[in-house]
Amino acid sequence: MDRYPLIPWPRSLAPREGSFALDGATLAVGSAELRELGATLARHIREISGIGVGVGGSGSMSLALDPSVPDGDEAYILDVGADRVELRGRTGRGVFYGIQTLRQLITADGRIPAVRIDDAPRFRYRGLHLDVARHFFPLDFLKRYIDAMSAFKLNTFHWHLTDDQGWRLEIRKYPRLTEVGAWRTETIIGHARTGAKRYDGTPHGGFYTQEDAREIVAYARARAVTVLPEIEMPGHAAAALAAYPELACTTGPFEVRTTWGISEDVMCPSEATFSFLEDVLREVMGIFPGEHIHIGGDEVPKARWKASAVAQEVIRREGLGDEDGLQSWFVRRIERFLRANGRQLIGWDEILEGGLAPNATVMSWRGIAGGIAAARERHDVVMCPQEDLYFDHYQADPQAEPLAIGGLTTLEDTYGYEPVPPGLTSAEAEHVIGAQGCVWTEYMPTPDHVEFMAYPRALALAELVWSPREARDSDSFRARLRPSLALLDRLGVRYRPA
Image 1 (spheres, one colour):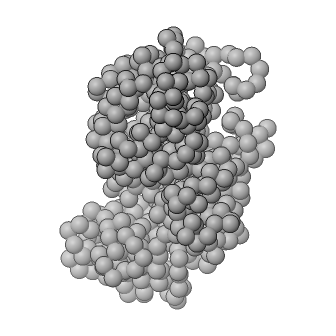
Image 2 (tube, rainbow, N blue to C red; image 1 turned 60 degrees about the vertical axis):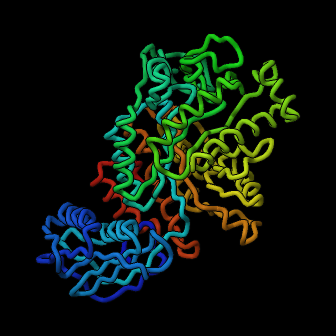
Image 3 (cartoon, helix red, strand yellow; image 1 turned 90 degrees about the vertical axis):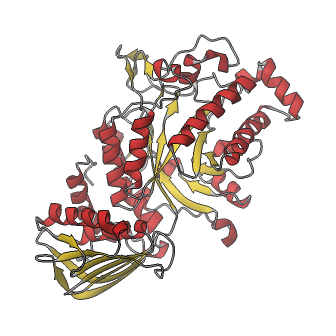
């Protein structure tokens, strides 16, 4: 299959003899809706081969919407012969993915190998995460990040916007979140788990205005990517507490955290806290139109709640039993608010503790046990176990790699991961809606470092969430990897050499 160097591998590919020559071709678009996609394909052709292709009402190449294309809104059919290229998608999103396939098939001398491809994804959620709280990254880098993931048919950008080390999104009702919470005085040098603590003495911070965030949402939408915002609660909230200390169970003082790890200080389950969070989430929902809002919910120490009269009164009043029950009650209350506003809650697998909110989706990161438990309760699950899908782990011998948080997740580990855990019934397995690679940036201060850690492991992720399970083959993937790295070169992505 050297003629078809595709990542991810399509559901069905029938090779043909010969190829289509782009020189002199014109591109017909079947509707006004597809004109912009036609211009995008023409731009890709020019970038790869130097050949200009006109976009008009008729031609030897065509893009069309076709409701008869089976298997969902992301499906497409690509038919390439010696004298024509026809791409049909059930929706514009399907046409977009067909264009990404063509982008990988076009050769530098302006030919497309003849082929018939009938394609649709295995999973509907195909995610790549980025933590901008530990280190702040500019808009142009976020756009390149989205360009790269969308080129390989990943469709959800999980934007981790708040944490102990920084609050990155403008909330107009609470300006101190960015005036205070977006800035830390300095950052720890080296690994937080070893040796004496040293700091760089340099302030670090930044935030995205609501206009910035809308710009990213629109940019992603044009590339068939949904942006999933994450606003952490009730833990990982030191930056918010530094800005609004009245949200805590103690009097502080609080500061935006300058080292990594988990802060003992969490949001208090008071009415003031819920008023604050509902106000914040209203503004978030006004920016991000996607179905889901991520509320974090992970790594919530309970010491402050154990000592808090407010927290203990809620436990007594609501008959919650203990602090795990209180965390579940907290999440359920936020879930009801989101549902009343037409959205769905998604959180890390700790939201299972004390009982899961009725319509919550679980993101399983502490291995696969949380995903299994949620699927058996008929809740949707996104699998992102740290052992295989955490791209902040080392990729090879730590002695020869840049500083990382720890662990070892090789390209082969990621490619070999199977999102549907063994032991689930077919009905339970339907609730595994996809998987996601996570990029936590404690030890990634620059865009180049992020890309080095994310790629090429994100290419392995792209194949395991799109391609049929039976089509995945590690030797074939390795053979197809080099042309995909050339595409990353054209995108300006600084990946780790594979």
